[in-house]
Image (cartoon, rainbow, N blue to C red):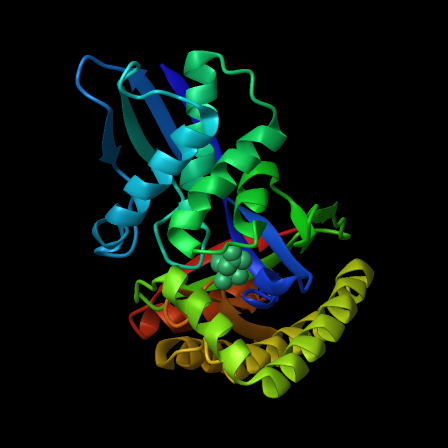
Length: 308
Ligand code: MEV
């Protein structure tokens, strides 16, 4: 029996922009998807999904998941007809959209496979294999989700011929709340939509992309200085930029407003957008609790965690 884990993540700045080479900042969160791989006597891959989360998520994503596993196995040159396996997924990372559940699950599976079949994969190779699988979920993924899922920590990420990945060290971890709209989003379609609009309205989109690029350098400085007030303001700005490229949604905007009204230093959508999750910066347990319970009172699920 082989085991593996992959971290969930939150994107603090520049989802979507990152697909087109603009730097972004993401952090792993302290919740993981766990995978167990056993050899069995059946055929191919049998998948048992015990993850908890948004209703309908696993069903909605089943086709993407099957394609992702095919891609990962092809990439690794792993023949599941010769080596039939049963994969069981669990762990404490909920299957919300926007929380990196697809990348975490792929990293966990590759690690479990590595463990059971002694494939000798390095972290780098695990990350690359998960990236191949991510294509099934996100079309043209930037690689930020699988990188956070593999390595953990707070990271600066820039997609390129060779991705730039830097670990950012901040003074101490800071509390956040992730609010779940409960809407399962199709990341692949949302990413493709941005690309289409960017091609159709180059002037408008290039301007927003440039602003997002400037913003993320400032956000990096603010994080390193631990100027959380400024980090929050920049998150609010980033949310506006994401609205301008039309990846927001009614429930997301509602939760973002609610978090700010309850004292969050900043709030924005996180991940693929449209549905899925938002993130609020809520330093200190008290503020975190206030914002999270305000969301719960409105009937939404709220995750209390830290970044950094
Ligand atoms: C999804 O978590 C983040 C996106 O930027 C897609 C990607 O970077 O692959 C929307």
